[in-house]
Image (cartoon, rainbow, N blue to C red):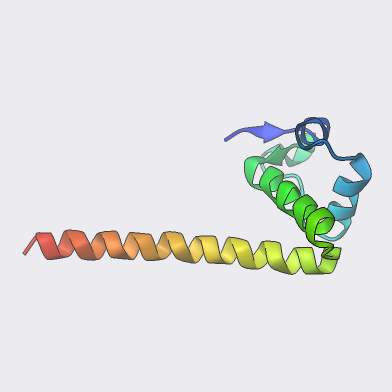
Length: 97
């Protein structure tokens, strides 16, 4: 897994540092373990910043709304992966008969 510094995120997404700080204050993003000591962010956090920026600037969603949307989006993604795994298991068990 790749980790990004705050500076890299700001350059990659062409945003300002204040936006990332606001996301951290709202607990929308945070440095990930094991890179927490160096303050680096995972690819998942990079994606959260990207989604948050789009929600705020394109749809004018406030940060508390962004927090809810990001959490629900990740929960839905997790459920989708679990469902895909269950469907795969069902297909495999039906072919084993």
